[in-house]
Length: 132
Image 1: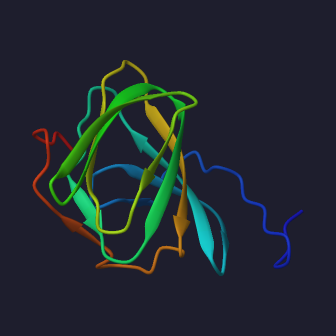
Image 2: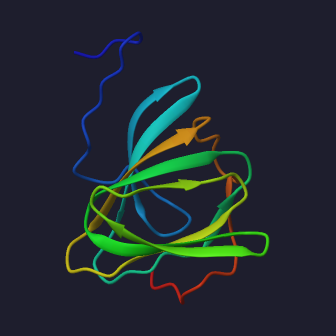
């Protein structure tokens, strides 16, 4: 049972929204200083590259296999994404992710502060040609 003091939310079978990067977003619990969501990228898909104006995110892969590219200033990194791996996306970092597997790539993310709305994410040049 969910209440305002103790939120509880099940993962929806259908996405709540589509992210600017092309991934499916299923909204989860939210509190004043942070929120959770699940991002899904279909098999063999490559997201659009984006950055965030004010938020930072922590991701934990729960299913699938892929890679994430992150860039801040002159520093770049490509990290393998497999179940159990967590990555941080600092405010302003350019990032793009891809699904290199045959099943959906599912990621649970914490967003701090909660997602403020349209205009938070913006497109940037990425590492790979997007397919979504």
